[in-house]
Image (cartoon, rainbow, N blue to C red; front, side, top):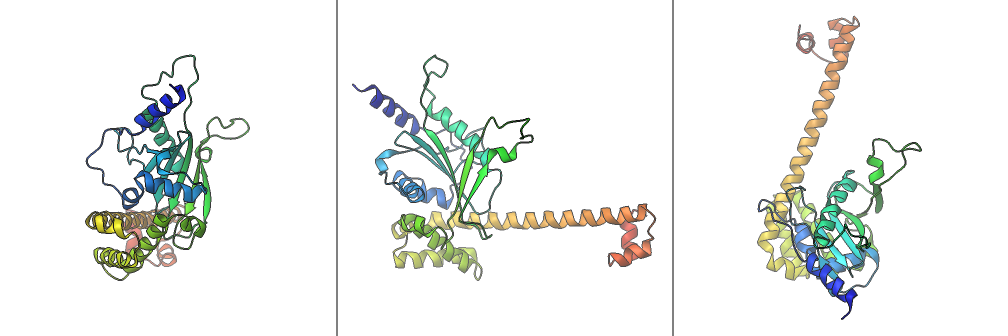
Length: 298
């Protein structure tokens, strides 16, 4: 009997367990597509230039917990040496290092739930890798790095870094990082499909755009089997994701408008406070005098 093999089997057994599921959570298209061993390892090989097979991978994606919202997209161990966490983002989130820190903590709890970590023997855990795949519409470089230390309130010679976490961000929009797409048929198909949905979504309703992109990709042999099997689910997921992104943009734009309005009102009050007349302020801000009075509560 090989103790090392027994240990590996134990890790794989724990890796296949999932944490309690919150039924309110809906899968994303990305997670649905890359949430299986074969697609996940293909994606990892494309990113890292490796050649692991599906047998080396065990999924450890956090299905949901009482502690983390939202859950992560795709996570898996590779050859019991690495634990890989991959997030899909349509906007660059500078807080991803902190989110990844929470995810990896929960993941290690999952992987070591029957391991004695209080004993005198040092335990071995898979080395983490943190990856974000970006396919938003804002211009971004092909590769970027986010660091947890950039979020620290105090970090200088007096306060050295005691904890670091590095997230590597890759742009997967069609035409970006082409070598990566060439190494993965699934990733290339995903890029083509999303670009079609986005293009058609500018001209027709999102439901129609998804249906048209789906029909075209099936006809062209792009993600054909997956789309045939999951047509309705993909329609629902992408429509929900599209609506969510639109809602986020509306909220963000509204927040910008509110911020600008508040700053404008503050400037008006400051000018009045130092003695500038209402008529002068109204002309400067292209307002009616009554509007200025309303802002000043006069």
